Length: 66
Image (cartoon, rainbow, N blue to C red; front, side, top):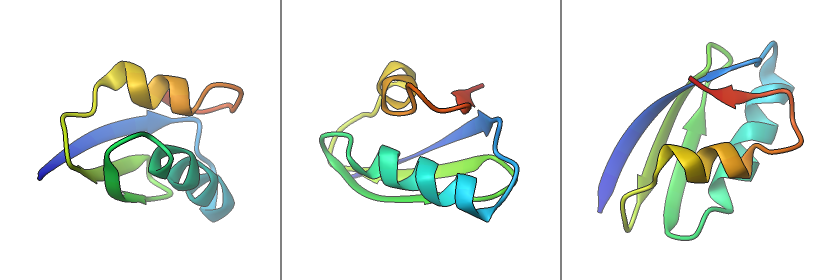
């Protein structure tokens, strides 16, 4: 198990954080994701999650991985 932290841009409220969290949770191997309104994202997974995977999960939103 591995915990990785990312920074996200474009989040402006709690609803934004929830949507980003739901999208990230759908990445294969993710066990848990916590996204804060401040753009912090903590992802616990069974495998290494790449920045590109998070970027793809957020595709179509106004959020991006820094």
